[in-house]
Amino acid sequence: MTKHRILFASYGASHINMLMPVMRALRLRGDVSIRILALTTAHAVATKEGFETIGFTDLWQDGDEAARAHGKRLAEGLDGQLVSIAESEAYLGLSYAELEAWTGAEQAQRLYAERGRAAFLPVETVGRAIDEWQPDLVVTTNSPRSERAMILAAGVRAIPSLALGDMFLNSEWPWMADNAFATRVTVLGAFVRRHLIAKGRNPDTIAVTGNPALDQLVSNSTLASGTALRQRLGWQERSIIAWALPSIRPGDTRIAPVADKLAILQAMLDRDTNLRIIMRAHPNQQLDFGGLDDRYHVSLREESVHSVIHAADVLFTEFSMVGLEAALAGKPVVTNSTDDAIPYGPLGLSTDIATIADLDAALTMALRDRPRPRLDLLGAPPTGTATANVIKEIDRLLNPPDRD
Image (cartoon, rainbow, N blue to C red; front, side, top):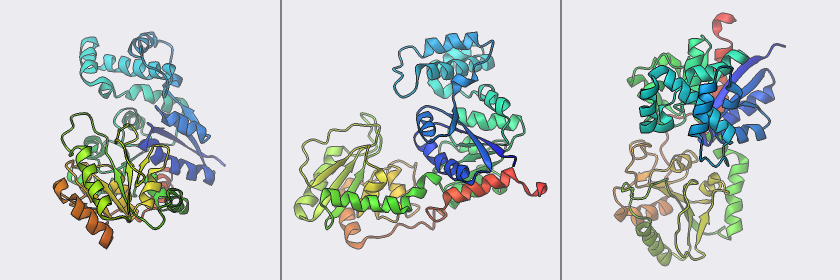
């Protein structure tokens, strides 16, 4: 049996988490060959899962002497803990050399000084991976550099491609809505589909699939992990509020100080002896919450955030994506959203408060009434079906009707 070849490309974190369920399911099916250009921390994830991985170190060619020199210069001082120095040198060197070839030495220097890696779009470089393996299909997420470049390189070669949209595409729509970008794109829900159509994307090229990374939200093992967390804490009979903090920089004025919200939660604890609080900082940040007593549990990055969601009765966040995950899991959500990345209030995904002066009342009401988030305005498929939905789109591109 001749197997179709699918070349995936992905960065780490939420990007590889979106592709991995699809890749696992396709591997079990056995009728495709899979290779992935696995970038940053995606390399360790994909390698651990046993997939054939390549990186920028596999894209060197004869004549890349200038790129090698750029790579050594630009990678100087990197620690090599998450990404090897060799891979960083290859990525930075090849990407910078391509930028320089397109814009000239002076302009490349200026763009890199102003934008850093955001100046890169290494279409010709990642095209080497396509030329070497000759895939039948290219699949990526909506990431803006190497993944976007891979889709563009596939288009130049008339190879079908699929770009998976992760969330609301507020910053990614300029390329995801471009009809010259990807044969098809997938989106989280009908709300996002309408957004891309309004920006000019052909409706016939957009599929509403959901996000495969969120399928595990409703798996039996994830549900059980929430119960297990309650049991481990000894909070089986307690009311639990989980607070998921977004990633913020020092001086960020979009949200009220952590201490102010802690004071509100402390007052609620003092009033309700049955209440408990789970604190969950963004995994990229280490926050000092001060001296918390045993009515609080600080959830570290080693603990699944999905376990936290299912252990909680109500989740509070400012504008973290964890609030969307909690809503899709059917949990009551309270937000104090001053960031429009996720339109919690307009979509009915949460009780959205204007200021933290309303936080106590909103959380108290949510604990009492347990309102289920509205999901109809988002228009997402049932949680747990996204992987199968994406694979249908892959099969559609591998076996178009005119080939039947």
